[in-house]
Image (cartoon, rainbow, N blue to C red; front, side):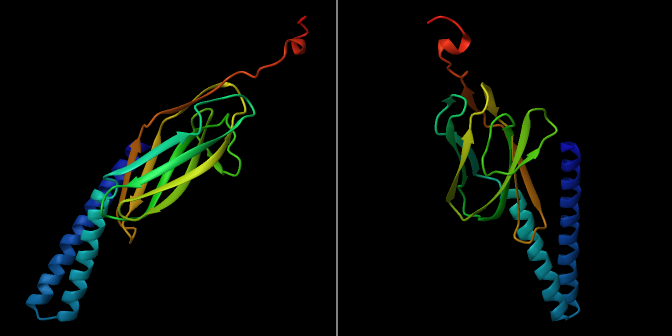
Length: 195
């Protein structure tokens, strides 16, 4: 699936570059033929494509995504917070940044819509951010530890595009975070054992 996406992205980038060359040539031919309206149209399309390709190349440069839990260990039924932080450490703004994060399905995330994942015991969380230059956005989500276990949060996909939606940039990060949920503490009489 990832190979198909990469192939499609490569073909789309080649088409955009071909359109850029065609638009620039159209503008130059229109200038030579003294057709100002056609020249302006050709150069406007060429400029739009240059902006789109620049956004594709530099859109995810200096973008940092982090997860942080309010605590790294919990007991079943305990509620904690997950903070997602995205930083855009460059001059280029991001009109939209899509984050696709994999969450363990055995944890409860009240108020969040999680999509199914092809991976077992995994759910996918989608969210969108809009970031100005040198901006950091933080969002907090409630997490309820429902079952004991070791929960690993690892893969996240980031996608963005230019304001026109012509050129898409994508990146996959493997920032690993973990949460340990201890077994529930039960009093000895609950097991039928003498105290």
